[in-house]
Length: 125
Image (cartoon, rainbow, N blue to C red; front, side, top):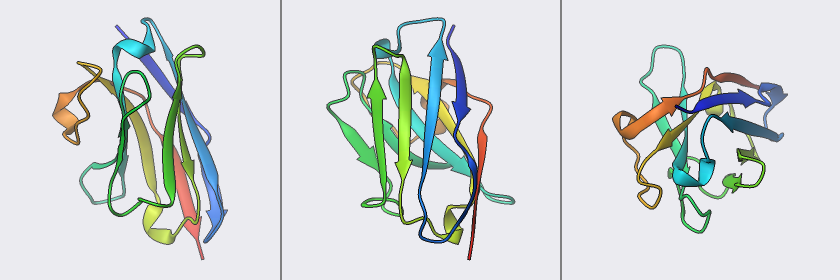
């Protein structure tokens, strides 16, 4: 059983940055591939980025590539999402999630076993 807790959300202006963090407990985080998803009001949950268990492999959605960077610290059992050049379309609740096996990166929400409670990001112009 893995517990995930996101933090770092908030309200910013267009063009500003935020860094989200996801803290894990209950198991060794390196056993899992990790992903970030987001869900805006009235929309389906959308995959944002994933990172492999050792941190070598990453993948990002086209909508955030070049602006968002996923990272992990397996010693601290945390996963981060650095979000730069934020735009209004990035407004959503952001969730981190854990999946196995750790070497497979997937966009499918159903593949993720554990989810955090989410953190709100609001970008205004």
